[in-house]
Amino acid sequence: MFWFRLKGGSKTSVLCRKQHNLAPVHIHWGEVIFMHNVFKSWLFFTALLLLFLTLAVTLPGLSDKLFGSTELQLDAAAQDVNRQIQEVWANLTP
Amino acid sequence: MTRRITVHPSAILWLSVLGYLSGDTLGIFLLSALLHEMGHALALYAMKKPPAHITVSFSGMAMETPPLGYRDELLAAASGPAVSLLLGLFLPLWPKLGLYSVILGLFNLLPICGLDGGRILRCLLMLRLPESTAERICGAGGILTALLLLALGGYLTVYHDLGFWPLALAGALLYKALTTKAL
Image 1 (cartoon, rainbow over the protein chains, first blue to last red):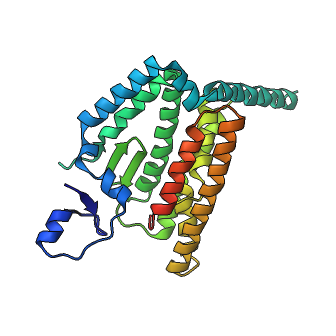
Image 2: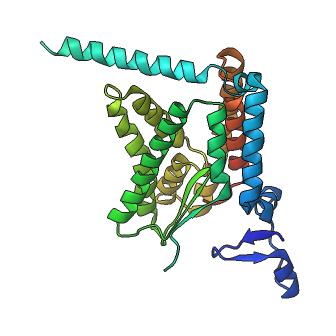
Image 3: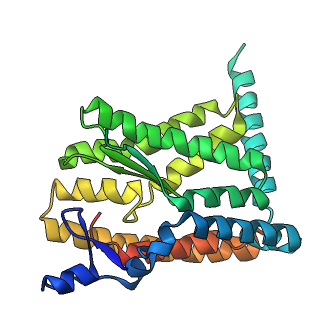
């Protein structure tokens, strides 16, 4: 069953709108996909989580492809900014 | 009693990031995001218009609010990034939290529909211009910003060894800018 949100915030289904002869509403394909019931299922997302974790463990190179050295660069940036603040603070205090 | 917080199943996907990033980085990022969202909530409570319902999902927190005027909406939208930028004061004490919060705050200030910056821009324009003109400017501004981000994402991915996430994030923002008609 596909669901979409109406302007007032209520939800109705495509089937329901057909049954009641309501005017068709333009739905973007992205909305249709993401409002399908499977995307509200804990089972689906748990399976997806397990798949991601399995890929992370079995394909170590994937982590590098996805995130590169982001963490290292952020750590270095945080330390660098911190060092600069300490220097400015040291110069300000007599 | 009506349920006020819903956790969407997609929220558990944040755990999968643990497999790719360290728990430390993910934990601090989530704390920073939580404080950012609390900034929005606090502003709404201060205006005596508390969120009726909160949905937590992979893409963040969505707050369902009572009808807000443009001024109130602007304040509520700006309070999240304001809290994030204020957390930058923690840089000397907790450098990672300070830096992540400032990055999160600046990212959310991008003028793209769906982000706080897009909402702030829209409210500011709505207060001064006719609705249709304001919507057009916001839409075009969002798409242009997202296209620039896509170029920046490509640059960061290729030349700065940041992996594919900047490109993927910019692509998602472009999709959002192209498909969001009204906030």
